[in-house]
Each structure stands twice: as structure tokens, then as C-alpha cells.
Length: 156
Image (cartoon, rainbow, N blue to C red; front, side, top):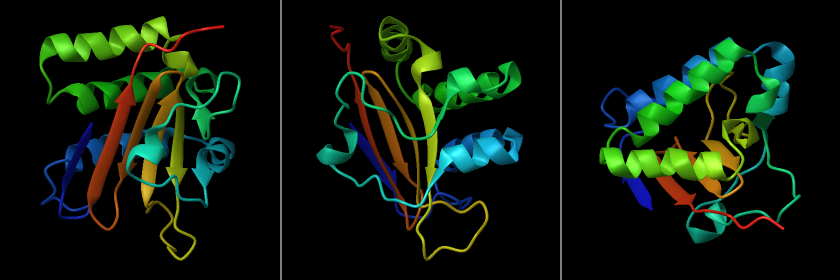
């Protein structure tokens, strides 16, 4: 699935700005070590290649929710609610069921991807939630492009 809007994700004019603000609340709750783990100076890309599932056992980029405090995990759960809020309740429930069946939220990783040319402390080009059978790849700058892939992933 794809969605987007022309103003950058930090702009109040962007209809998805509430999603950016939601994930910023998680960033603000992370300690220095967690921020280092969650931040990458890479580009996860866009379009279909950016949301391909990783092979079983291959590491996901970013900070695992299982390595967060209970308060931080609740903030990420709030981000999830914000991400799925525009969709029908039955679709949102299915997303959460697929995450549960793929191993649960503790298998999800949160990553912030910085453009090396960007000098802003909390300005990322992308942020991403990723785990088994789940990728939510959200480009903030220069405008919002979001690619999503969610499915039940077979286990070996």
C-alpha cells in the first residue's frame, strides 16, 4: 500500500503530520544509547523494493521494541494506533492480528534514517517500523511517501 502528501512530514500543513508527531514522541523518550541504535545514516529506499520482507533470521534495522522500557513500548503502540487510524476498524484489527501472529510487537524494530547531508538533530529523511511480515516505511522529507507491506509470514 502507498500513501503520501506533498508538504514535508514536519509541516503542520501535511495531513499525516500527526503520524510524524507521534513517532517524535518515541524519539524524545529514548535515551542516548537507544537513539544511537535506532539511527542509521542510510536510505531504506522507496517503492516495492523498500518493503520486501527480510529472510527469516536476517536482522531488522533499528531498535527492537523488546529492548525498550514499558513506557516507550506504549508510545510505539500509540504510533501504531495513529498509523492504522485512517482505516476501517476491521482492517486495523487485522493488521494487529497479523503482527501478533508473526511474533508480536516485541519483534518490531523502529529505525530513524538520516540523510548524511542533513544536520538537524531530530530531522530524518525516513523512519520505519519493521519486523516479521511487517514494514511501514515512512519518508518524511522532502514530502511524505509511505509504503506499507503487511502479511502473515510463514515460519520454518
